[in-house]
Image (cartoon, rainbow, N blue to C red; front, top):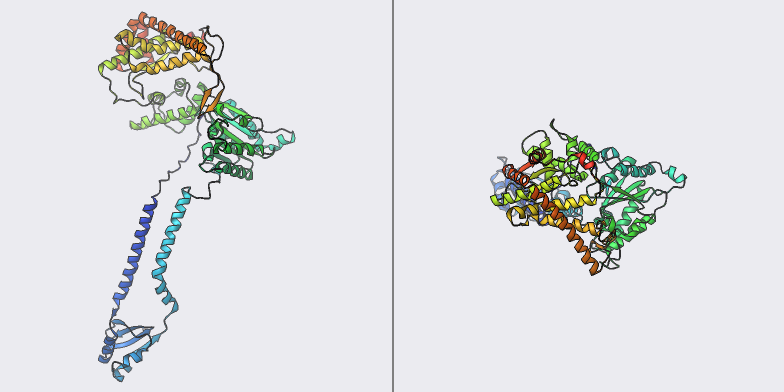
Amino acid sequence: MTARKEKQPKTPKIPDGPGIWTQLAVAFAVFVLLSAGYSFIREYISAEKQTVAISQIASDITAGSIESISVQGDSITAVYTDKSEKTSRKESEASLTETLSKFDIPSARLAAVKITVADEGGLRFWFLTLVPILVPALLLLGVLWYLTRQMKGGGMQAFSFGRSMARLISPDDGAQKVTFKDVAGAKEAKVELLEIVDFLKNPKKFIQIGARIPKGVLLMGAPGTGKTLLARAVAGEAGVPFFSISGSEFVEMFVGVGASRVRDLFQTAKKAAPAIIFMDEIDAVGRVRGSGVGGGNDEREQTLNQILVEMDGFEPNEKVIVMAATNRPDVLDPALLRPGRFDRRVMIDLPDRKDREDILEVHARTKPFGPDVKLSVIAERTPGFSGADLANLMNEAAILAAREDRTEIAQYDLIRSIEKVMLGPERRSHVLNVKEKEITAYHEAGHALVASVLPYADPVHKISIISRGRAAGYTLKLPFEDRKMQSRKEFLDDIAVSLGGYIAENLVFGDITTGASNDLQVLTNLARNMVERYGMSDKMGPIAFAAGAQRAMFGEGVEGGEVSQEVQSQLDGEVKRIILDAHKKAEHIITTHRKALNAIAEKLVEVETLERDAFEDILIANGITPKKKEDIEHAPLA
């Protein structure tokens, strides 16, 4: 599975807004600045006109230095002969003439002054009176309105809990539209889903003949195989609205919120019908009920019950299809899987070699590659990779090229990115001392040597003693082609290969280290599965002691089968026998080809990394014939 062909426009990341206390502090600072500015302007205007006492005005009239006087309410403005202005105030109850008569001004001087009386405007009076009050009040209301919008944007509305949180992708949104052409691989899954597309496009064809299209489609597969992408492609092909929501978004701490959101989601989708509802990770709410966790009033169970009710309420011609995705179908409630609900189950497997090459080609369209790049080689070296892994691989290769200031991605970048995705980045700073480096070299040489000699083990492609992730070194084994099944002989050889490092350490140094701990865990689990699950033990017979059916308990699958102590002792004995037989086989190989072991380890200490060609040269020099694809194809099964 893969992402879209066309480069999606990047959605800018919205930075987190300032905190509530920061916003209040900013609002208070703005309020203080506006108040100070208002006061300054008033003082500036007042400073232009000098304010004097009314007695001074009377004296200036007597002296003949005033040309005119303007009266507006209680305010007096005097214009002098030098064109300057002075202001004063009179008594509210008395007129200007009555006030000036108290100062014994000569009648001739007073008559020479032009006196005008202007009515005081009500608008100006109320404006000057209310501005000092209204401005702070309006500013405060503006701050409160802004904070309210911020809280709503952050999802803090107290009355929106019951609303659906689904994201809608409109069929007219070309930037987010996905079709089957944008999806590589999953051929069988796309064929299954074409019926859904046809029904959404031409529902009458099905309804007239009495056919009922499945109400629910469950997409099952490993993480990263493209379940969500396929669901979007169905909506894109049909040209219908796509409502997407995660199962965890239904569940809240408040009782009934999940069920309310389910009702709102289905109601919205019915109004937009034909439409698709997609529930990702449905196992978050669809686990088996009655597991003893949460009781009968568990909010998760109420949400699941509402989903079941809504799906039962669909009419045959409702034209709303529910799609869901999960990588844990074993823990889902049986009521979800019965006919009439999620009765169409589509399995999405990991891509095979051809599908991986197609996926790589899709991702390669937006990246510049050098002439040495061969995507077919990369597809061969990535068995077990999902579509998401391949996308990550291509991105890591681009990062490696950019880090080294190159404008094109080379084949070497892609090879390095495979190991980075599988094992983690190189830890060059994790320097081993001389003794640890030698032990690691012999450990990895033991794995590689046993894998090269045993007929059913995968061939070695690379050996390295450079630390990656948690591993001090690693041996990369890859099959010639993808396999859907594994035989008992292949399992037995894998167990022997896992013991190769442990045996090499003990044989060469007379001691063992903690470096083999993960190998021992892997081979022990493999041997136990052979005995308890796959019936690959002659002594125990074709019996599955570990029941395939599991029940959900505390979020994990719990084995349903139980065995007696006697049978369990026999099972443990068989597991031990298988491991000891593999130990003898690997020990014989390492002892027989000790010269080859020393040559591989010495070369690893010198160069730290051996590619397949250099490794096979060492094998040929020591009388060991490297494996070929023909040898694997003609090897008999167990």
